[in-house]
Length: 143
Length: 143
DNA sequence: ATCTATAGTGAAAATCATTTTCAATAACGG
DNA sequence: CCGTTATTGAAAATGATTTTCACTATAGAT
Image (cartoon, each protein chain N blue to C red):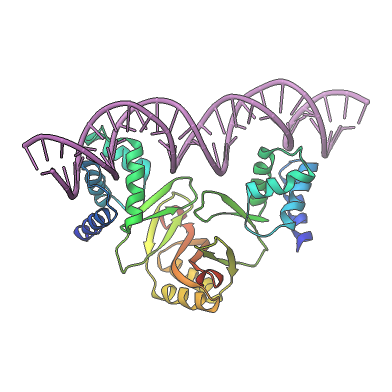
């Protein structure tokens, strides 16, 4: 839920002794309203029309804060740009990346979730999280 | 097998009409002799003692060639450096990344391999390959 | 409400990894 | 051995991200 994420971020800001600013609000709104898997540049460009005074560096800094606070996650899919996606607590998903058009879609799979624990356990690893990415051609690109 | 990889690379070079140079040999030797998951800089530094004339750019270019030829694979684990790992044909493995010390270890798991096909199929995806990474604390870092 | 200490901001400069440029060099086929 | 063409090393260029710095805005105390 969008509201939940705002709360989480506010709490994070407060606990860290940081300040709640107009820019952070605007960027958070924009981030929550967008598509998932936004790159920093995409978000910046999208913001620029309505808020031309917000600087590039602020968007970078703010997205990093989102990631720290737990409402966003950083991702690199090998195209040289860091992307941020929404994190809904308690939910985990993985990705399908089309090597044709670059589209990124998501999937959830319980077996994958269970497997991470098994594998981690058998290697003496204290698991935190995992990433799984399937690369291939999406339906549209197969034609 | 190291020899097999050399053969594969030679064949790749020949088929592409490229040239087999002293530098490429040296870098290939070094790459095959190293640890898996080398970053470009690590390999360059390691090379520099014995071969101080080999340039940074050549190492970059050559590792890219290795990846193109199929004997290496590019990887990004989120630390800002591209790493290259050995590829043995017919074998696939995934990774355990320690968030404490940064150590990267490997695992193979048949169920994961099977699952990629199922998931891809159910999304109309023509799968090429996948990556799975488990992040957590390795046994040593848990103490 | 005002003050004050401190965090945040925007713009530009700096940094880091990677890529390209370019003149000089080295392979390969003939 | 020659000529064509790929390759090389060094330096400059690039692209994404981070830092610097002078200025501004926020939050809490007054």
